[in-house]
Length: 247
Image (cartoon, rainbow, N blue to C red; front, side):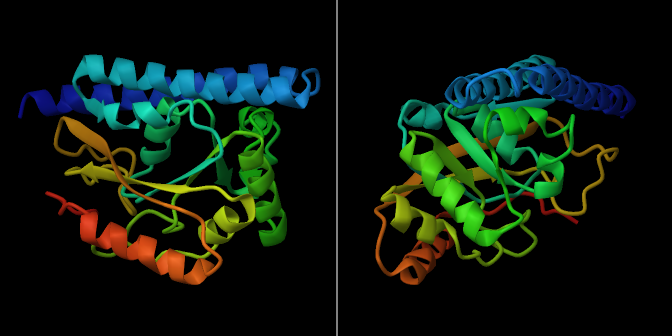
């Protein structure tokens, strides 16, 4: 019990570090965005985001508070034109995947992408806004054809149902149009930390451990709806029960 106040302070310090890394890179990206050619910006922007998150996870691991086990993702690192779909138990999932996938780009809220400072790094990396469905799909297809890796959470939001939320359409249509395979990734954790409804200030059991493991790979298919159902069933069958659930 004596460790709990110290652990709480250390966890808040890690979150401040993450915020500082993000803000620092966004300020740099704000200056670079109008100066760099698109291709250079994509490579630099995505690599910088990945390295920033890797630094965060390395430091978090040193403290013993947060541990990331993602060796399974290593074979995907240089594979372009790939869609990576994962379940979404926590806000930390995207940070974990992108840290290991320097080619990765994501779909994010358009309002955040348009923010002059908070969205600068994402704009430089050519992340995609979700303001229009047609434009989102077109930009995702273009990014895949250019050799990027689209990182998606088909649940659309953090998991609130057991074992996972129903999948939303879009990912299999993107795969069909781009001719891109879909690699499933399972994110396992026994921690409720930063799940849906978990406040930043609340301390969970320590250490917080996230593990990524590869699932089945699916080829694109003309019947996008049937493929989406098949991928969803694959996740349901392969999910590991959590030792703790989000409130």
